[in-house]
Length: 135
Image (cartoon, rainbow, N blue to C red):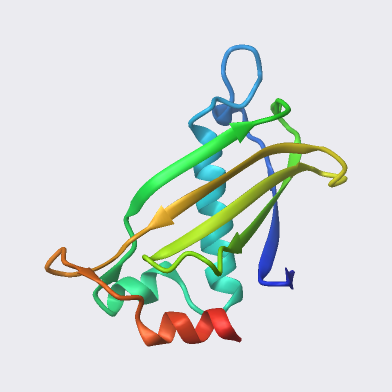
């Protein structure tokens, strides 16, 4: 569901996401962030695959996660993803991970991405991406 330039997707935590204590391993939060941004793009009518077919790539330049409440095996989480409209150097995705009932915030974070072409040169955000963000 897209609302106020954000998109929410649910995900059930699998055993492979967790450590020996059944708690989600810290690096897997960045996988959850990736799920969120992929689904946000898909909801906007484009996929990473389509973007890359246009010879445009979005490497992660910076990533941050604040862990607030632990997530466990078999929990259903809600990954809310939005785009920071103030960030102009590329694209910045903002994430909030909630418990299934959306009453508890489990984590918050962001990833900043540059736009690069097939020669690995940094480029301005392409018009077709800017157009998606304005709709």
